[in-house]
Length: 450
Image 1: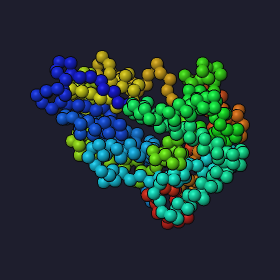
Image 2 (image 1 turned 180 degrees about the vertical axis):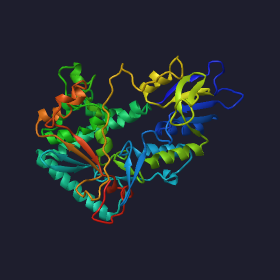
Image 3 (image 1 turned 30 degrees about the vertical axis):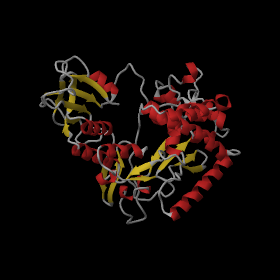
Image 4 (image 1 turned 60 degrees about the vertical axis):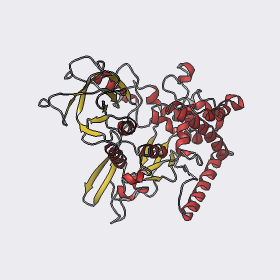
């Protein structure tokens, strides 16, 4: 989220007849901050400075390299999969670059997108993008894998694959209408007829504001297909199941409305050109490095330092990392400040009328936040051939266990002692070297994996 905080109150608008180039400061050099700075530099005559608290650009998008006796491994410090590659390509084009690969940003589709493994050992591959440019032998291999996947769905319930198609069609309508109109905030009237049709047909079977589980129950009988169609809700820190103790089934609290099925479409729809799961070759640090190079090519300056306060006249920041008692706060004047930091940190620590050296916070108790992540990074001396690039392990043996596996989202105040080794839970495993072999050493003995 980027927030334009203020214009210099004692001057005219810096965009209208200013005697000198206005100075813009972007607080936070993550992906959003660098993209915004690049577009702004190409659109308006101004000087732009990004101030980033870390030693490198990219925010959460980055890679960690581990050197062991048998070679080098790469792990992702933040996201592990990339969606909507056309958004990145459009950024480069708007900045005068025809192909983002010129800046080292190469994206490869993950086929299949996911492997789902259930608690009974059953497994299924999903996500076969038919528009992907791959060799004829790979196309035939993908075709056979997709056929096996659809047969597996039919084994879960009668006509399971056809019901899956119908569900993804509804989710595609959510995506095609929701992405431009509500996420990008660009009016797209042509997308509304399909959205309305999928939402209202069959007496509102796919109504997007119902609890996600209500729509899943209307489409599927199989618990496995329901789990397969909803695990992406965790990405936004919500659960798919109706909570009858909350108004509207919990959609105003911790239950995802059905419209979040658009996440399934983004990852798994087979023919929509926007969809698919991708891996940046060389890791997510390549994403950050390419965006930094683009920003610098557009004339953006990059500085490292921790911003301690933002005001309409400029920002105070400590110019080196890590900052301690010997670091003095420096004031940098600006005509416009854009904050790309997390919203709670921005409101509680940056935009405030107080001593810039006062203790700062990165949370706000006035909000209820989505779930965090506990990640383990393992560098192994053997190859895990049964894993795909992206794998989800799901409980789906009965509805009680399925809902229990999301219990910490419904009741985040529950004591850890109330959870025992028998409490169901879902988890995700990323095997980066399946799609990008550079994530692990070349095989010198049975095999290595990251």
